[in-house]
Length: 160
Image (cartoon, rainbow, N blue to C red; front, side):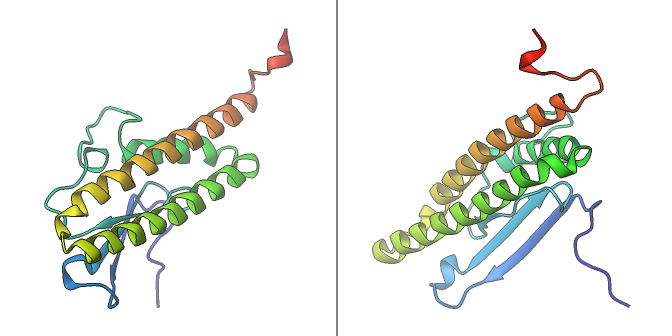
């Protein structure tokens, strides 16, 4: 019997990618996601970096939009109760993080291979996190508005 690697109650998913078409120093990419797998986005990170950006590593028990963990959890909590109206924004978010993440990885692969400076993994991971933060907050704004409009005591701009 087999069980999927990610279910709706999965809290953290990581996919390790080992690429053959780049130098060994940048071969490893770890795709990271937090929260419910239905609503989270996979973010690529260079695995050989000496440190992880604060957006991934500075997580406390206090809810915050300043890290990927809580941003992902908030999107999932809001979108879950409004699945039909939120899923389009979530799928756009997932696609944007994936596509922009791949684009940044390719850009930095080329920079590092051209220059031979593989310490740029830190800079690349910071840019990847900045992109993810921008996408996460934009999506959180959309699913929060959608959830607000579907409250029993709903919010509507035409209420006046």
